[in-house]
Amino acid sequence: MNDLIERIEAATPESAEREELGVAINEALDIASYITDDGDPTQSIDAALTLVPEGWRFGIEQAGSYDGSLKDEAWCWPYESNFDPDWQNGQQGYRDAPDGTQGFAATPALALCAAALRARLYHEQR
Image (cartoon, rainbow, N blue to C red):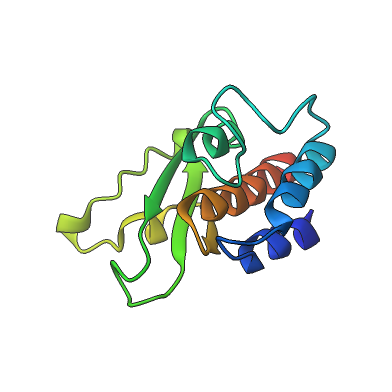
């Protein structure tokens, strides 16, 4: 699964590999179809949300919003942590989430795919 996450984070918005990534996600998670009613998770945030483990929250940040990064960022963290990304109290938002997972990629959907798959790995190891 780590190889798949690395491929997702390396993909470009125009990448022909995105369909292959969708199929690879399908195979890795052993789900019937990577295309949902919301679309392809590598191209649609709504569809990528279906990869976030049940009981987990998520956050997405556009490239450059916080640290000048050229990649979009996404995080997932367990709901039970009661973490609230409070920017006003000196936290670094989602970056401070306990047990959080991150994804950095060329688009918000790809970043969320990577973060959600890392969350699934983390959840399975708990």
